[in-house]
Image (cartoon, rainbow, N blue to C red):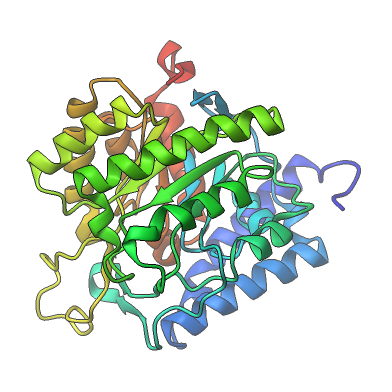
Length: 369
């Protein structure tokens, strides 16, 4: 349990400064490992720091340009994207870094190992990552068990997907199991139809397949809200590789089916900007700096398509506070980071929170979406 009183502010500032300044050395050590081993080592270190109480030395989460989205009050505009904490085992650890929301998963109804290793690759020259993880996760029930007892005071999102061996014609069954499994402990549920690493998954972004699935989930949402006397918003995560006309049609479907948010974007299949680099040709989704401009342009176009009908969470290539602000100016209400955290370290969280707050200073900073 956390201490009864927080550490003195001066101690908190010193602890955060020490953590941020040490990141280049920590990263150099981690980058001696293959990417997936480094990922697991980082999660183990976060869990150990939490158990030892070291994370309590960091400043507690403070509101900074808070916003209400889909009825949820987010204490700041910056969140952790799904994929880093697939199992929900480090929620408090990531929360201590300053995130206003943490999205865990992707979680599937049944545990699955994902694709064969190696499946995670760094493109260091471009501050990028290629992954083909394939929804490796312990299953929705274990995710709930891992998240039980969390102390993180921010918003918790649960990203759900279908098992790889579930055919698309039965995909709704898996998403219903995920929605039901997350309902009592998630603040919002994100429906992932856009990972490129599960065969055929992106086919569910086709117009009628997407509409049918969302209609099924929205109907179940109403049933669960009545049964449990709590409302859990449903967001959808989409790919940056949609053609403009397809994107416009999906935006119309999202509004018609009364979804409560869109997470844009997932990783890209494009390799523009990474040509000739080692690992660029690996199968999987690309994230990081090569996606920055593409994701921001996609968000701006999607915001025009939606015309205020529902909020956008902007993701893709945020490696600086300026990148986060660009996403907000393009039309996002919130932003999420993943690859930038790997390359820039914990200082990126504070930088993004502060940059967003500065950009939104004044009455607009308290706006609701």
